[in-house]
Length: 228
Image (tube, rainbow, N blue to C red; front, side, top):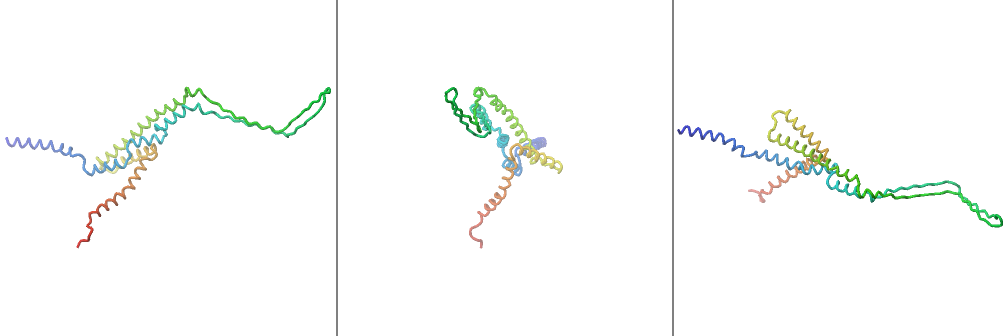
């Protein structure tokens, strides 16, 4: 009877140990690497805003284009024309009498300069302007850019986390996954104006500063007077 109870206890402990280890979560080293990854990379919201700004289709720019298109009819089209007739300027005045009546004739020859300026308004476009609809169609482009950036961002993030949680045992798999991450990073950089490269550079510049701060923190606990 006691042996049966002991076997049951051992079986229960064997079943509960994996669950207990699973509930303990990630190791401190893995948690530190994941935290460093979150600090180093931009957020998905930052990547989306950078992509919309890079393609000039962010909400503010689209609203400005829509406003300009709606008032386009108020802007006139300017037409200018200049004409010149070259000849020698001369005035010939003749005073003659025809049937006992005096007449004065002036004959003028010379250079003529003519300059014309005109303004043309398209007032019907204030009521309906098809270009406003063209600007509104940019919403489809916005949606496509947001979806693509989001897909690339989380595909890259899953690969990064997989390398941390399940590091490959062979170098070929390690290099293959790293090349895939580099490919996704380059694509995201091309769509966001090198947002990820600039974030990595800022992270590299902060590392020496953090190390120097850590050394200074250690000096705080040193005794102010020399030991005897």
